[in-house]
Image (cartoon, rainbow, N blue to C red; front, side):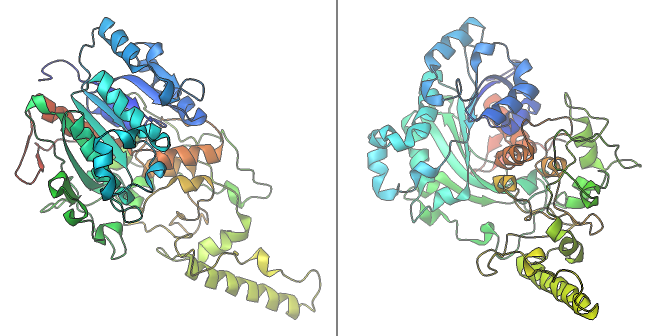
Length: 473
């Protein structure tokens, strides 16, 4: 049992540190981290690097963060010399692209070890190499729901079986971040393994907040146990039942932040660092208060409150209704163009003829219906993705007076990064890191569950659901 000892974890594919930040809030001490991306590594180091007991256990950046080159046996020896004889958890989200051709028919190939030796899957192989050499009491893998049915193949089951072959009892489940206090209906697959000799059953908590999902949401899809040759491995899509606590809304997440209107001025340049701004007057709500006062990342002012410059579309944003998507935006843009053309003709065709391209975006409506979408103030946001680095039309601010997409700080708020957390790089770098991250509040909930399981403070019922005493975030 963990007892009075603070549990210890290692973070692989650590990104900007969302999972690590959440685990730290849950009581874990992260003693090692690996991340190859230069900007994400810089963000991790700037916010969390000073909290590590040994800089030699930080493999961050392109030169050091290639997990294939990390000597985890040396890490093990170094950790033991520092008094960390036991690693309680290894957590990470290895990229899944290399698994596009893996299926149930290759499970035996995986169990024989050949699959993990495939050069295309070396990142997953190295995750399990770290598990083998560091022998953690638990491991946690995070990835997209598509792992359950990628091209008709179930990659998640392959990884569950790999974990079992390494000596762990394994379960996987789909979790919705909104159920854990994140203002976003983000769904991700998690795989949890506990060492068999511990005699513990792995399982997941469904969360504490009510989540309402639309018909087209991924949770409505048939993510059922019949996708598995070993259905006992899969807990399904978990959502809380019988709770009166509502999900945190976009308005609750962003409402205390000051209006951002700089983009409406002439010659606006979307640059970082941006100027600091004051919070709105008045007492913040519970979520905003947490984002301002997260221990170790307290903030008294708003930074990174800056959006991309898209002047063609500001008037379209303003005219859209909450929940409107790309087809509605095109109708509005076409109407704006026709009005401009009518004014030009009424004025005797003086000056340049309005150009349709100056009003109407060029994308096909039947291919990109979700490319634009205006946030709804009294609902959680939809998934914040790394695609925000390329454009942020998928998350248009609900306040029509501001007529813009979300800022970097607002994206961080929707992912539950505290206001004192800073991101390296330009605006695109920051959006990409935020969208790729595990929401810290979800990481906190998972860390709390795993620590409780290892300490014997929580149990798992017959269906694999964690029975844990409710605690405030």
